Length: 458
Image 1 (cartoon, helix red, strand yellow):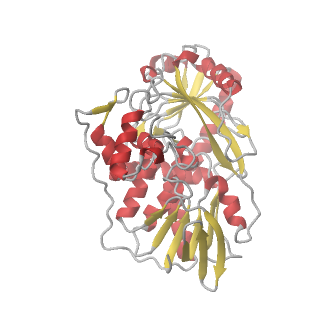
Image 2: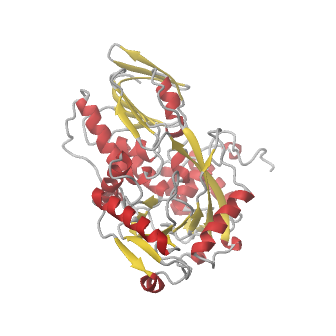
Image 3: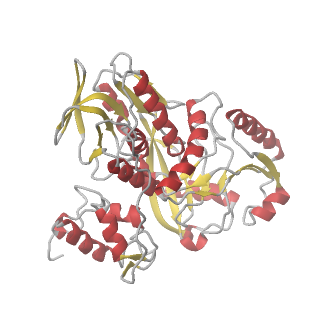
């Protein structure tokens, strides 16, 4: 595909946010993703927290983009019909000696413009967070923290970008990038693209993409976080997002409300070498349970219904977002770990400005389609009993782009209940086969190598 204005590499929350923002303009845009569906990289393991901006230095890019992104997420959610909920966060302390640290965090966040911050005492906590340990003495309350489904956010951004002319190419691993006299030639395993500008949002692999054009001054060091999903019956055990005092490299082990109802606990923060290491361990489980029970003693291991791990693309203490002057037209967007989900719409605006300042002409379209059509309500043909997902909702998810069982799960929550798909997976496979025309043996959980049925007789 030739004569493009912009190629974006990576269809996670940052790449799809950039694609949607640029689709407001008269541009030819392609979004390349190595996985079979968007959101299958770093974004699939995101906890869905929309941070208020309390845990990053006021001078940092992370902090500034987080606060702006928190505001932008509200309007984007309304436009795309998403389930953003403002639930607030509490950073808790167990010792009077730690209250000054809360005051320091509050002061730094107020420099960024985070609104409504206040220190709350034991009496307030007892009234507003009754299941919290009585050992918690005080907390910093940030009312603008929220939750959203990270998967549905990515899919909505991608779908809306496509409505406005963006072409998305999944299963397109970038193999090489060659600078031309004017622009770049991008080779994938399936096709060749020519574009005036390239935006690198490749997550864990952003350093490898950057090295393809000779920029090698940063490295992505994966930081694994193990998280544990609790039964939906625990939905109301906490009223806020609950944080301990942050550490040097992590916000700590949290109690997380989610937009789907199931609380989560975690994550761990482990430096790993392998960018594919998504293993969970008994040690990780012990660490998480030990920490969250200090905040909320009623949490038990028996409440856990699913384990998973994600890798954060760490590359130093701050985001790397810059136009590479040594390679004109190439923009790196790397090291986007927490609060990357929150900051994504603000990152998109920053990238737009970098492209414009480096020579890209931005002419607004007369009509920009900023709304998505609604998801159909559930019909009587229920496939997933745990989450009450109907056949009609599954078929609609497939029409919207789901090509795998995980794609269906992330869009509808079919297979996401306590039975782990024990009752609904077979039916979901059948519907996916009917809608896509793929043989049953070619239906996968998350792409090549994860086929579910090895033999038609199985």
